[in-house]
Length: 213
Image 1 (cartoon, rainbow, N blue to C red):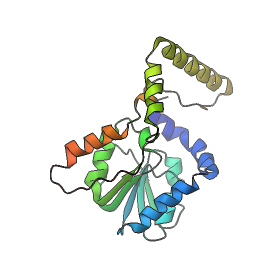
Image 2: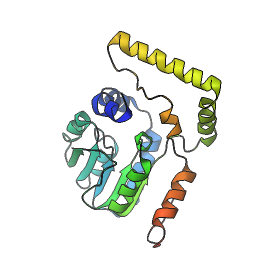
Image 3: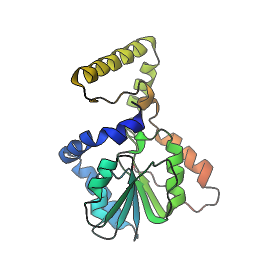
Image 4: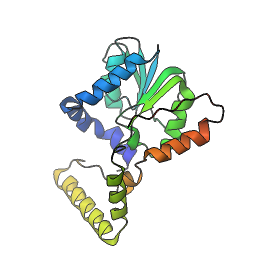
């Protein structure tokens, strides 16, 4: 099962529980404070999920639109007042313009992050916001990626994926997300993203790039 198929069919079962048990209050409050500081009247969330917590916060001020690969999560999001989510792929073009386009706690899921980021920038009237997994711990990511390319690392990954596949088979449940090697190699550090934005979008000088470490 590849990444997109997993998100479409299985991820919502794990996400709802994970989202309800989260303890990232400090981070959430930082984002909420950032939202409050922006002069915006419309917003679009990429990978909106069930709408919690960010879309629900913005929906207190105006209608929030969003997109997600899981129809189940889209259905949950649409039970919230002032949230209008739709099923779709974030790598495909978005139709309308919004003051704010954001993607939080989901950016590392995309196979083609450059296409998603291009869509976000081209659709935004004013701001885009996104975060990057382990962006504050680059050494950990580099060490893990380098290890996976060694002989022992490949054996370790093969054994781990075999074990997960065996558990999935025994339990008759896609409990684990199977995609050997790809997830860690797809993590993108700040340097890659900054270089991509500067190269593709700063020619006209219409954007201002802020990075919060």
